[in-house]
Length: 462
Image (cartoon, rainbow, N blue to C red; front, side, top):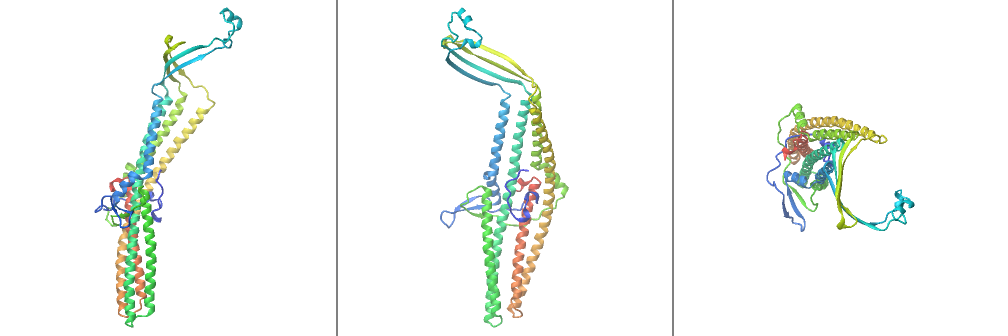
């Protein structure tokens, strides 16, 4: 199966074509358009991009989509070449030459030449002028006919492969956009952790000033703050990296500041039965149709090579003027039929037939593999969608409990009932809960894109 360049979005999405899910989250809202405005920094424009804009930009600019369009043009040109072999081939030439002829070379000895008044076998120089048009028309050639049909099937295959690549690019850019949103949310989470650490550090200092807390309590919060600052730097780096990957997939210039206008959200989806999803995939997946056409192309190629065994008939003719001077040239012509019968070519034709027959069998094997791959992708996508939906609910509950734990710990510390060990532990729980929630939303939205692609419905999301 032809795929685009493999993009590592997340470790759990390795082989994202074989994983996950349907319907798309409502990403479009404010900002459904690419708007460029000058950033505060001179010379660096801001590009505000919604998911829909990103998909459209990728369809227009992605290098893989553009290459496949060129492949269609090349396949069409090849089909035109095959058709040209079946059409009349007309050419013309004008020839003027001055020459001598050695008549002895044509079986006229010197004694016979004397009878014509010639003293030597080489003639005097003379001129010949010839202007002529020639025609070659293949009347019947089974091999050429089947070759032309195979070339037309090649155009269909190239077109379907281009559509497959287009859908793959849409899914890939969707996943990269979601990855960039996940990175944005991670930065916001780290900033929230830093803000919380600063508040708790102030509380610890106030408690120490009141004689309730110790310097160790303050130091714990200072360590926690520095750890969160370190995590923020890592998240910011991942954020920029995710944007670079998205820009590369879009095929636009890197010299922009990318601002994503959509958000990472959860939108409930209707549960789907595996049988229904598989039926939709078998009907709509272009990979299956493309492989069917590859099988047809291989069969026609085999027929073309086998057709070389069949006699061929062609028409040959010419018409023109010939003479020793242009003004003395007279019209002449010739026309005839050529019936060619292949007899023996050293076994080359039979070897080509065996090779092409093997290709037919290979395409049949690949057809089964493509069908199995589609089934695997749909089933994995359904599993991932169900799992990620449950993860969102669990992460939401975990966030609520972590915040409650933090509230209790902070109140106990403020009342002087305990050290801030409970507070720092609760901070860690909150940070983990934030990460779990972001990751669950990311997996959920990514799984919907993957299922849509697995069913062949990716265009309906965008």
